[in-house]
Length: 405
Image (cartoon, rainbow, N blue to C red):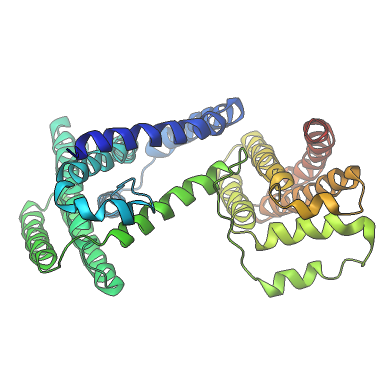
């Protein structure tokens, strides 16, 4: 007899083995050191900033919006796969325990975001409302967890509806109501918080009634959603190690590719062209590179101490170059590269040349951020120190790493 609870435990064990294999590479020593530095620096400046918190700072809006977003983002991880579309549909009436376990698992794995946000906003909450007791914030956490459960169940019901527009509008309305509830709760307007909670319960019951009108489970939609989330995880893990199951996405980006097309048509530039095209058209590298520049620039601009600014500049230069090294293995499954009449060392040199170009561009951008912040000495130190770091890291660490591939 088919036991869906035992089946979920088996599928869950396989999922844990799959993700833990890549988490070992993601949470390696390099990332641990970077995260420790980030957390320490943020905690220090966060504490300094709270000591001079403006009286009119929109604490309620910020906490309300973040908590509203966190409870609204409640995807259901079903761990379903494509073959299930054939083999499990016949057992749909026996899958109740499986989907119950999937909801519990989805709730548990999303708790860490809630706890991180609540812990981070705790000092801000008590700095803005020093007259309040500690239990009021614990009550807020309890309400957040209740709303998280309600949103997760509502999302599960809406997955029975195939129309994408209906699901999106439901999510937008629930998001607005969630933000309103937590804004009024933090602000101390309990009556308005109660009214908006009643509105959410009405929407919650509407979702239940709407889902009951749908016949059966939309298996293809559940499989599609779960595969999208796994591919997101694989794309992130691919920045640290090779992921054979990653389905690479290609974007055209004609206007960016036009800059690469200006390379001379020469045999020794084969890999120069390939890596530039891959960086621009792949769905991972360009976005990650730009995000790291933006985040690094914000740290450099807002951190007051010049030496901390320089440390952040070097740290983000290191993170960008370290993650772009995976370009070397991006085409590992393409056999045609082995047939290129081009020497292997040209491939390694082409990657190091491209990484150096990217690092120099990032160094210049960080230097310009110093100028915008009015710190001209920091700009000069960033150009000199960043350029030296770029050459040492790429022609030291990266070169040594590529020689062992």
